[in-house]
Image (tube, rainbow, N blue to C red; front, side, top):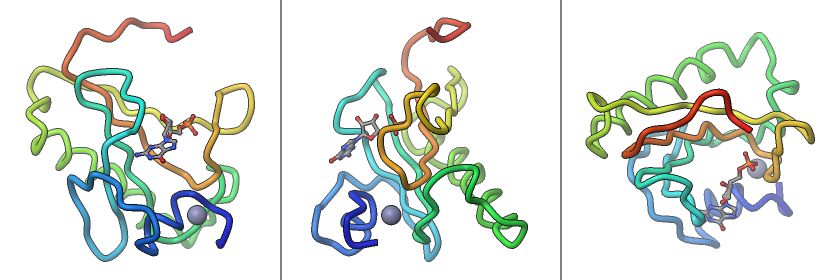
Length: 114
Ligand code: 5GP
Ligand code: ZN
């Protein structure tokens, strides 16, 4: 998708701070971190929102969580704890319409979220 920020990163037009990558997903640090560790995990396939996931994306959706586990270990927050969040559409505050799993950790996180 030419006008998608995260597709531009995947195409190498914008260079994020990548912490983990494989053939199907990429994980990079959020530009406006909300915790000492704040990483975004994206599929290399453009999917705008959770609502646009298909049954054929089952494996890919699962891989995003396996990547979250790896990112947590790589960034040293696996044992202290972390939160994964995927916002969908306006009420959740989604601002980039290429699905991404937030991985947040390195401090105590309040619940419920605002
Ligand atoms: P959303 O609000 O859609 O759930 O999350 C989008 C996230 O993308 C935000 O946390 C925002 O800080 C991050 N973001 C927006 N633009 C950029 C960018 O150019 N680079 C990086 N690394 N993160 C970005
Ligand atoms: Zn995209």
